[in-house]
Amino acid sequence: MKKTTLIVAGLAVIVSLTTLMYGLDGKDQGGSATPQGDGTRLLVNALRTEPDFRVDTLDSSMIVQGEVIAVDELSDQPLSHNTRITISVDQLIKGDDVSETIEVYALGGGGVEVVGDNEKIGLVAGDVGIFFLGWMPVSEGFYTFFGGSRGVYVEKDAHIRNWGGKSIKTDRFVREIEKVLADPDDREHQKTLGEMIRDKESE
Amino acid sequence: MKNNIFIRVMLATMGLFSLSLFFLVSNVYAYVASGYTRPSGNVSFYLHGALVNVGWQGAIDNARSEWNGAGSSFTFSQSGTATRSPSLVQSSTTDGYNDIGALSLDLSYVGFTSSVASGTSIIETDTAYNLEKSFDVNPNIYQYDVESVAVHELGHWLHLDETQSWRCFASPPSMCGSVSMGSTYMRSIESDDINGIQYIY
Ligand SMILES: [Zn+2]
Image (cartoon, rainbow over the protein chains, first blue to last red):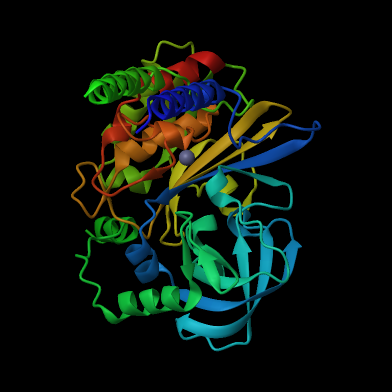
């Protein structure tokens, strides 16, 4: 290796890291909600489980492949899930709902500010992809994207990009999901908080 | 031969640089202050009776003390117990009470905090634990830690947002964005969380 090449490489590393450092200093940085106007506003923070492909596959209620046909902002939906995304379903990968379209409600919208990049869905009509859906068991219940943005895998050129940023062929991704689903769920069941509370009440 | 020595010196320099960078990074602010605040410098909440019944009071007390001991002027206190549902989380409606309770959420949620602000002032906050997940005050690898979740969520009451994710590797702050089962590191706030609360209050 040439000496000059090494010097240039070393300097490049130092310069880029230093730039990164200065860019990182930031109490005012990040996807925080900026106050505007003077009315009241609702701010929501979701604390999610650690992302894990196998667990997400097992714990989502439904996984569909399809196309977004409408995105609407509503207000006053349960749990501040005010963004309604209507998906036309091409293929059901997990679950037993057989309807042609499904309405999915995402956190935020309609005057609610969601704090944190993990919740930014950014879907528009015409987007196609694979969607992991969770069932929210409040009032009559509704579907939402499992894990916020990490349940949304938009497809481009027969590839989808997962939340880790990795691009993978769509049919291979579907096979990986099917592989997880074919495997038994060997996790040990622990009492949920709801079960613990019910047990205490019946004591 | 000459080149060989040069490469070694270069590698050693870069190694030292990375090491110093690591120490530097752990002191750079990563917290995110949303710009919202509680001008009174204190907040008092109610804990749902069902959570007291399953033995959570001590863990919630610890979480409250953790922030109260951060060297800022802000204080958390508890008004008592209640049986209300956390209205802001459930239905986006204020009821005049700051509540910590529980609701049924989908399985990707551990906790959920909603605040309502007038201008930049927070006027009410509610937190819900997910009834569909498993928690314990001494969690095993299949349970979430009650106290860790409380410390993180109370950070949102202050109003700190999720810490920038690059900081969430070695000795991660309590305000890092996701929590894993069995993990208790969020119980103790880190320098970055302390810098955050001290910046706001
Ligand atoms: Zn959070």
